[in-house]
Length: 374
Image (cartoon, rainbow, N blue to C red; front, side):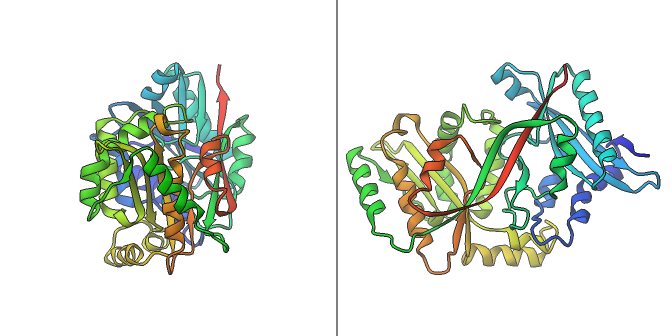
């Protein structure tokens, strides 16, 4: 017998947060989120509380042992933007037992109906800044710090409940080609001259964000507006992103392309991979974890591609070659093995085509599911 409880006590909140850490403790591919960040979902001042309503459930077996968890989210900004009545599911983790999955999803679906929703989709978080998509290929690959790992049987558990594919994302490893001829650098220089653009300069992360953060958010809102699962940036979301980026970005691995008036028209951000740095501490910022993060920042072997945004005015003018040329230079540096793209929608041909000049290995696939309730 499975019992599902809505999370309400301090102990239940801790169980909710700790469950995936215990489940995947010895899995070499699982990368936990920062524990201090995950704890914020239960805060009264959580940044998404002004646009979202959320519920959390734990599942227990007959002996009182926790066997699963799930969260439901009503993203009002997304529903308003798209004219929908959708509930998102996220943070689903379960033992390999259909009864547990049935009970957890039944709880979320009941809550969604009570709130007037007619559809459940996911895994999707509060925004596309969160981990999203169910891993359906690439179970033997190390997760990036930005994305969640799950066991292969999750797909069966979810599809047995009537959930169907809505979209897929692919993830790739990007390598510099062995026979690079310098063509990208020439194209990049030509585009910059033609449109009177230049690459912005910054001495450190703080200066980069001070000069270009506002332009970044403006571009992301424009260029991501029609992409699946995205919502406009609120002031709270902007502050959260800037605070997080201050810890992990370096101008060495970022590019802001600006016009004659210093207006940002393109921006690309990479960060050194933090996957190995946070694994051993289960996402806790222990002294050892902080030391590993600093080492990863100073001498990275893998780069994670976080964001690429282009002002729609420049979308068909070839400015993306500037990002490609910058990435090519990074990949040809000593010590850099490859870059991880993170999530690219399979039908986002602009971003998929960006990698054609590189040696690309598609190694993961993620899926968002949908189920109509009424």
